[in-house]
Length: 252
Image (tube, rainbow, N blue to C red; front, side):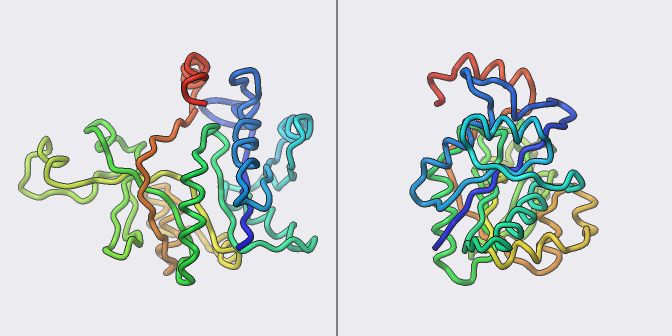
């Protein structure tokens, strides 16, 4: 099974402009992600997808593979779709595409391997990760997306709200009575499914929650959720970067 990792990277960011080029341990953040996934023997290729010449030049400078994409994409999934289409037009064929977050420079290879393994089941179209919620602040935060799944492991719904709601139970008792899961936003797609997803119009649920994966569920696609115990180190703000630089030796 041929698998490619595509790393969407954009310069514009409300909270942290230029984030992919921010220096972490002496290297731009995007380089960490590239080197991390490029070292995996399970991946046939790893490529950065960007709409910014500065990021393109930086990736070329450290010897990574990079492709320019349209500045009009609204999501990393759309950017991945364009790269896949261009690669296929050049004769490169893949079975699985992993959308790796460029703002998670310490992405764990074991997580990517678990996503790849999910496609041993021919019924799996999309795979992603979930992690048990460990504290009430995360449970109640709209920035931590919660996911509920069927007994088959397929996602039923994603929400910024705390789901499921426990009727008649004091909120402080919720975590003791039920295991909640948050969504870890790394996706893997079967290569023939990704072009279908990027053509879908925005759905009503997606508009409500501002979560693109709800568009896929609304249109009948299934998302296999794989449980992980790893707490990913994401960098969303300059403060996150400063903290990561303090502890670079322990989290590398």
